[in-house]
Image (cartoon, rainbow, N blue to C red; front, side, top):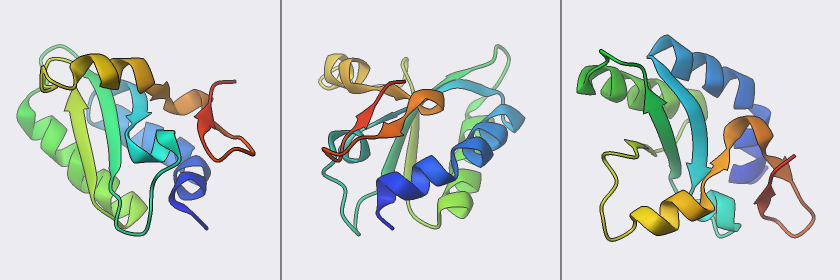
Length: 110
């Protein structure tokens, strides 16, 4: 199973864990979305955090998602995006709820 398939298969669990940490609007970006992920790739998540949540919540989410997927993950908010890559990340981000595996090997929206 490739990384994209693993994320798709665990989508509901990822969304549930995110909600427990106050994260919503979970999106994927990076190599998984572009179809470039390999065995060394991490999974990049972009999330919106509920008001009043802290970096501790974001860190807890990162650790729990790492456990769910059994691999390294990055979790970032729009505010936390590096300005150099912000526009690209926002363009390529795909809602986790809507990912489908296409025959071309990239994620697409439902």
